[in-house]
Image 1 (cartoon, rainbow, N blue to C red):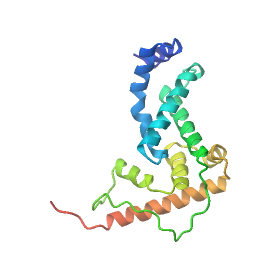
Image 2 (tube, rainbow, N blue to C red):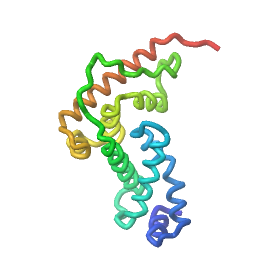
Image 3 (cartoon, one colour):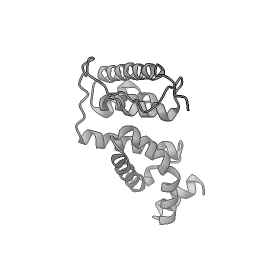
Image 4 (cartoon, rainbow, N blue to C red):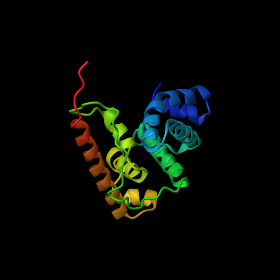
Amino acid sequence: MTDRELVEGCLKKNSKSQRKLFEFYAGKMLTVCRRYANDATEAEDMLQESFIRVFNNISQYRFEGSLEGWIRRIVVHTALRVIQKKKVRFAEINEDMDIEQSTSVDGLTSLSAEELLKLIGTLPEGYRIVFNLYVLEGYDHNEIATMLEINAATSRSQLSKARKVLQTQIENLTKLPKRYA
């Protein structure tokens, strides 16, 4: 089934088309939700709320650009709404604060995408959100500032600090002694 056929079926409220659309995109979109959520349950809630929005707004999809990209934007904006309800603060975090280090990965010289995503997940929430929006979703600082209702300078600062923390974490991981089986 093509994206056009899926969308047309969803427009007709065809449950089989809705199920197929969900099954095809849910895995990828859950990965997006996990980057913004604090835990698996919150990610699943974000995903469910996102697909409710997808189905309620499917008539707005104009077949311009990819369906996946359109769904991803809805997922990201839904995740941000959930985060904003929690009133996440993008306050400055003291440089001397003990930032949780991930030690679940042993003796790496290079990180896989999954391992890097785990490290990103350990970032303080404000850092993680801005990092995800800028690096992984491709938004610029002005767009991030608008979405999060912060200053563009705050977005740049959060990104800079996130990168610094990640660099330190990666350096610490590569210094770990290698385990031999």
